[in-house]
Length: 591
Ligand code: AMP
Image 1 (cartoon, protein in one colour):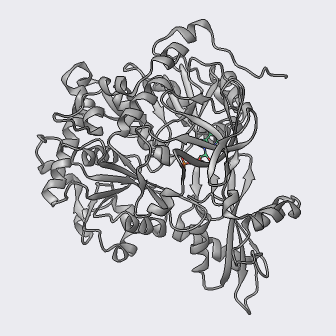
Image 2: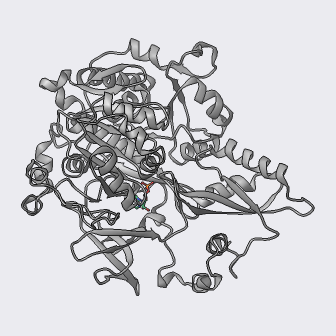
Image 3: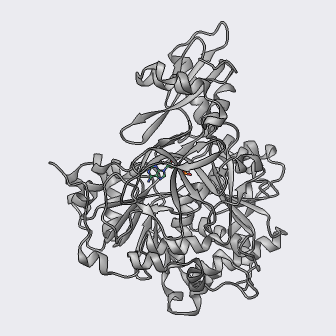
């Protein structure tokens, strides 16, 4: 069936406030956003105050903030205010000071949300990690962030942290949330979080954090070197409010489901903060993807706004239209997606299977919140990421002599954002140089290549660097290569992403072996098992190719792009210019 290139909105779609009409766009100001929030006496600003305590003065106090579907438990805004006060008091009791670093390694359990918001109340910097990470990425990140407190569960602690705890000298306190089948008293050098919460006071005066105080630390990956810790501050809350309003259209009678884990920035900005700012009830599903259960949640929980990811949409598509037809979704009124390119078929599938098209939007860990979006008030061009949100200036540029200049409409270039929006990262922790390299003048270069059309819609082309996007996770090849090199048989390793219909890209490794070691099925299995154990299944390669040696540039850098061209059957000649590209011509995308 031939499908139109534009999905128009109905007059009813476009008339609902607070949609981003051209008039709203023209009238937009950050000071108006700031005025919608409370602030703290004396000019301070605290994300948790705006997200939680601000609502407890009025009728929202008794509204459900989080509903944990598997356990059948709920936290109202009032409950959350109280539990986070207790958590902040626990931190004070442990002597954790403002600016201290607290890491969270849990599934999507109530303690995660309480610890995250309670830390923000106390002015403690919080960094949620993916519980799917293996011990190595956990240790690397806790060391980069100088973790002093870790909140986790007994099973995760015993499987992933106990063995590397000695490698993280800054870690002073490990707080364990209770878990069936474990007696925390039997585990040495840890504290029972629930005991501490039970003993803590309900009263707490929020720390007088300032807008520029560090609030959150989210790790992301580049092509080379260690993971990067993107520093986010309390002022980001303005952006979370703005995008919750214009990009996700959240209202306080909505039931909202963000399927992302808070270990990924989406799961924090939009799985925790933005919905709370708008007084929404959020659904939390602790389980992994399961098509039938997901349709059940959308239908039974009467989800009205759904924020998900292309891999999940493609998995639903794969599970077949018949399954979608077993349920009805009368409450659903807006669907958005982020994290990877959303194919036009997926946008249309939404319309056909769920009754609504899927609205793609774009952002990244560094930007702290949505930058480009298909908003409710805009016709959708399936395959496009949408238009710049208000307050955000986006350009497609090319680098020329140390500066950037805009390219013509429809021409491909680097996606750049003019610095100055509230949720922009304030630095890569401990790596000023890498941070500075992201900017040319006032422009932040995102590392993505894209086009803009004559209507101001942006179209994703590809990454400009070698990072891999697999099922929405950004994976740095260097981290995977480093783990592979620790295997006793491995001499050299290079890691690339190869296209995959379902998850976007899968991680594939090329390995050369030490002299005298022969490749074989057993060794193949053993190296994959080694990588999974250290890195976790989400990050480890799915496939390994043995090669006698790996191709390198004259300066000794392994040529991942040549390996990729060969793996994909592309002409190798295409890559000759890349081998010799100098930094001045824009080869340095690794910020
Ligand atoms: P992360 O920092 O892990 O959120 O990854 C950010 C990167 O994901 C971006 O720089 C893009 O490469 C990719 N990405 C995010 N959203 C989209 C989208 N809507 N379309 C295409 N790529 C996207």
